[in-house]
Length: 368
Image (cartoon, rainbow, N blue to C red; front, side, top):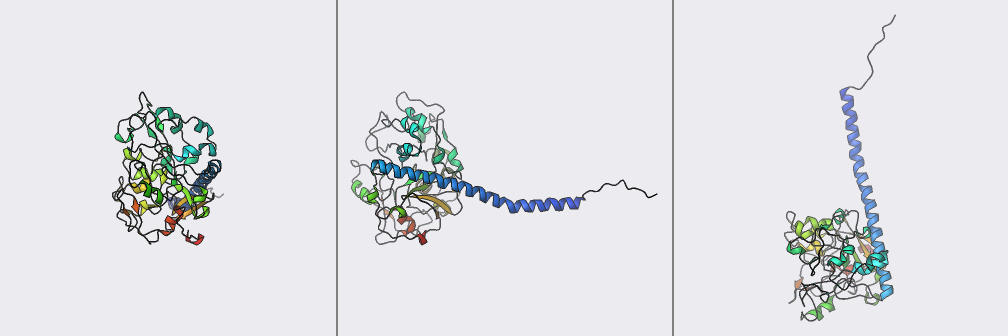
């Protein structure tokens, strides 16, 4: 009679390690593909948000015969910190667009007769709107908390007489309007306060800018060659500034330059190109992360054009040569009021041309 073996079949240690190694290799090969698919989905969602906002811009123009103001000066509105020429500013173009992208109840809750940050407007600026956040911009889901705290950068919030908003929060936006080739007009530029105001107005060439409105007729470069706005990553601004400074920017209700308006003065994704040193604090020029356009999408960003289209603009797009030490285009200087002046006869680059509504440049699709 033959002897039956009681030994059970199984894997040796070497075989098990080989299997584990193969699984690890497969995971390593599949993970980038999964991450790429997820980013593609986030980018599609981001494009849809910009299309929705672009449609809102078009509908606003149809109803008002002009595009919304990027921001403006108030008349005090009971603000104890207000005085002529002191730079106080009022709400953003996004407030004006609310009824045009299915946010009419929020618009109706807004009190336009008072300062944008007063406690009576807490319901609005304390609301997070998904259409204003790019899913790739994870920092935009955070909030500025406890606006009654005392750092100077938060001193203009909820400080009206008797005002109080303990533990209130204010939310952000991933999408900024375009002020064109530079912030020629800002909250410290007023008709009765600056000798250079008229010259600044004459140079203002963006679609969404401080104190000035644009019309369809003023877009002589063509609606398909002019963007109304695009991505500005809250995550990037939070990385390159101190926590206190980062919390004081990118509020979606604020009409300040840098909060909800950006400029093509700086090339796209400029934060990748300057000699910035270690974060936080962009040693060369921290303002470029607030004032420029940028995103966390690989290789570029989505920009919304006046004709309603959304195009992915590569960060390698032709742009005016710049100084990597400070991010400013070569030859740009400031006038007596600090307003940037481009050298005469110098090509501003395709990037700058797309931001200008009336520069007279000719841009082909091959250049994008």
